Image (cartoon, rainbow, N blue to C red; front, side, top):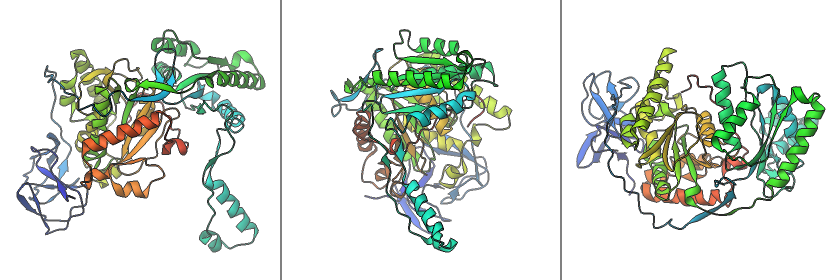
Length: 550
């Protein structure tokens, strides 16, 4: 049965509106009635009691803010009467036994992936072309033009045919008004040519603006990030262009590769322009070696692998007031299922774990991991405060408009992506995942920076929740987009793969949605489903320079 209000946890003192509610309307919940003193938009909250100034506001059973003015029972909780506030946290040993959910439906299941020499398994098979420094970006673009179309990886967009229509209208002497009202023909999006190498999903070009001019730490981190992509199970091999004089030296990249894969056996071609000489000679070598690498990569085919070989990154972007009660807990259940099956899961975005640190430190199996998590979170927040910001400034205008009025409210809902399992490791950016189970990875809340980092750490598939509509993708790992509400799913169906608005509407439980998402993820991992981000060529890639990015 469809509900119009929800109390998330028994200890909460605010109620979430699941639909637009009107001033004077009386709603009933758990045997209590509440008369609204003002309009409450869907996704926003209202008070269960009178709040005096300084009174604590609790959601998800954690402190998420304090009243800045008197709030009457039935009144709106908003940015004008509530300010961000969180509880302090401490390190303690409080590890309750964890019981995995029922795994009956998934025991023995496999996915079809690309097996690598080091034992990892990819959900895709890509060749990478990478600049070690931004000076090589232009040469990378030239390689893209030379390779992508003729190898059959270019996609022709419908907008090209629409541009042709506009040119024809202009040449025919149509007025501006006639052009604006014209019905442009849409021929859809299709591959330009048949793939020459059918077992290679594509050639991806990781352009960036780093490698030199920043700190040496930036260069080291960039090399670590790029090494994460080169050693990634979804990568068949790589061509790397280096100028030669930059901070991000080829030797540093090779050291970082060795840290991640001591017996690295993939084809890797590193070309240094200042040693080779002319651009034409550099390009000739890069093209020949890349082509030979693609011939080798094409020999790999999909074969069955256990679900324990999946490493899923958890991400949210364009979050709304429903994120923490539909899509996020749903993929949290998916996370618990995969971990129960021996797989790996990455929870990142440290600015969006503000206020739930106590729960996460309590879930750390190793006390040293709890200490590291505490250190990383506090250091990150202190750096943000030092430049006049702080985690409390994380919510975007879109977040606030749709009910996430404090970072603590946003964080409490965002943390639901991590399910309930123990934390088996805590990593600093851009370290690789080496243990099964739930890993906490230090990244910004920025969607693309965080997704880029999760993939570098080993995620071979990403589950990405959104309440407002975010097109984020990744060059080598499928990013499955999950809507928190049905309206968004129907409105932006070209970038959204899965709908969890069914939870809000009472048509499905969190557990049922979590199982449905895992079943879908297995098909994506096997190459049976082409998700929206891949179909749209959404290859977002932004390295983090360890500055203050919320």
